[in-house]
Image (cartoon, rainbow, N blue to C red; front, side, top):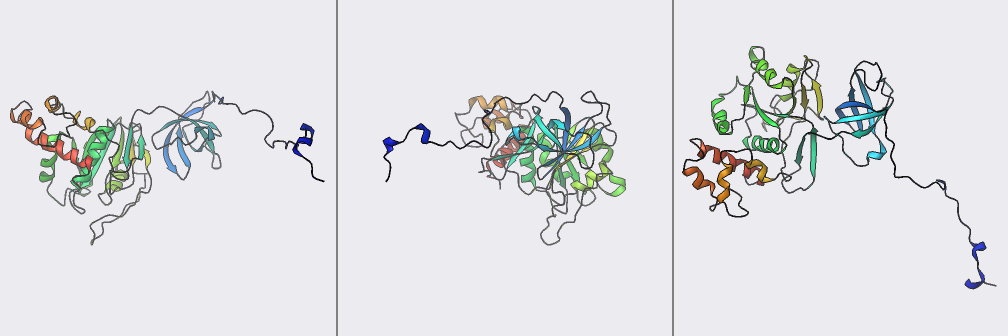
Length: 344
């Protein structure tokens, strides 16, 4: 005979014991006071190569490379090349050792890009750099000004100092290219693999004491240049396709390399064919044109600075921006168009 609901009492209810125990979960996280600091030099499929300095954490150990994984408490927090992190666990650097990254220190800068100009999801490429080295060949393959402009915008947005490096100077005249970028006052170095790498010493002067990110599209000689700067880097190099005029990707992931004198870092990144800028605030671009920025005070609200009502045209025509005003304004608008995708 079936029982009515009123016939049941609490003694009839069986509670299944929890397999995880009855101890409540704590929101407190361990302090990891014994964690040692390190620098992330490479990232590969969830494993992080970290350089741990000498004598940290009260231990007298030599500088060493430690493999690490991300601790669970960091959740979805991203870790990229250039990050300063804190490690616990096996930090001895043995062949089978694996430490855990438990903290990521605040970043001084981030270089970011998006897949395209409509993608709202930004991707951090490198952290804590202070210089963006934009590498382009003068020929084979031909320069891509639109991509260079986008890299300049990304540098300005990240507060990185840009540096143009022109490779393969033995194949083409540098003057036409440099004339295009002269109004931007971006420093440049001209290099060539001929004559014992022309310009290498000048480039080293720009890299000394700095953390420099190298970017450029495939085939421009970026990895060849990195190998010349850091002889034991062994970065893969490739040729340019004679039919398409494009190089093949040889660097598949970013890696931080210390310069031989120990005073400066080079971060080599994979060759890029696009550089989305959906995350960039247009006002940050104008901030890098101090000779033009005062002229925007007369612009209508919401002005894109590339429209008939823009007050910059009158400002430049009046001579208040100096003799280079017209070319500087054209350079500004070229970068704004690069940001908005109108130049592509």
